[in-house]
Length: 341
Ligand code: NDP
Ligand code: MG
Ligand code: MG
Image: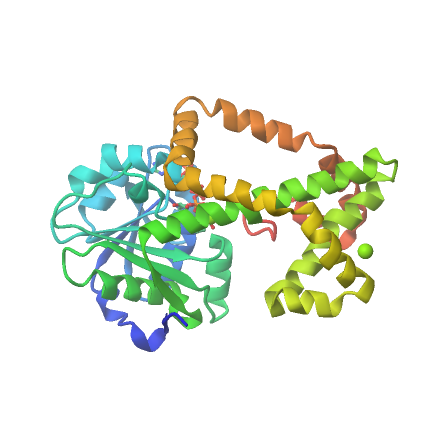
């Protein structure tokens, strides 16, 4: 069993003694800034000129500066802009304002792992990556609980980077739940693999194929939606509570037997070979390069794929059905604080 770190393993005073700049005030940014502030840390926010997040941060009583000014007065800089803009923000406004003895923090290892950001000599580089969406990180903290997190140290210039990362995780509330140490490489590669092969890519494609197979065979789309999408949540809740075993214990014997005999027919060994190719493209940097090149190129491929996904018939069926479920209505709202995000 890997070691877990809790409140008693971290010294909050290490982060309380630092001036922290949180760059970006989105999903993670608002949660880090507010949780740290409530933990007694001196926080300022760095945002671009004319940022739409500025008013939100100021309404919480936070000081908002330009990215350059926030970095210049800080000891610790946490970069929480979207991954694809981090290297530009870093090159334009962060790098020249970092001084020896400062610390540069991330919530995901993408830009360090793939070499888009290289910190100067004398600067600690570390990660505190909550394993949950930003809005949950804030909500759990306010409820007196926390979301687990990973920490990692890439460069330990001060000899104290690990203690500092643990202190930051404590300020976030993460050591209330448990913190595991990893490396930038392990966090980045496993995170990308999980979302591509299983959580986002794998599951989305599985659901779409299931829906297509049923509707092409002449079954009603509404029934197909219930069977391949809506019930997924009930199954996943059981898996999270007690593993795949609990799911199999809870469903009927018919469903359990069908799981054993048909699961490996649908997801056959060839799928594992495909997964290995996906992992190889993550490890060799091909995925990162394709993503960043497209982002630099006006996001042509990204926007095309998004439009194609939104146009899938299951989305129309789902939208219409959810209108009829009073208990689910709020979830078609993808704005701040909605359950869906
Ligand atoms: P968001 O997309 O929510 O971040 C948006 C914020 O970044 C906004 O405040 C936005 O300002 C600001 N921003 C965008 N571009 C710039 C820029 N050029 N200069 C300054 N600020 C800018 O990001 P996330 O919170 O999703 O992700 C942040 C980091 O956290 C990433 O590394 C991600 O991988 C990691 N992470 C995210 C998780 C999540 O829950 N989403 C989970 C774990 C890790 P404006 O309002 O002006 O657009
Ligand atoms: Mg991820
Ligand atoms: Mg059924």
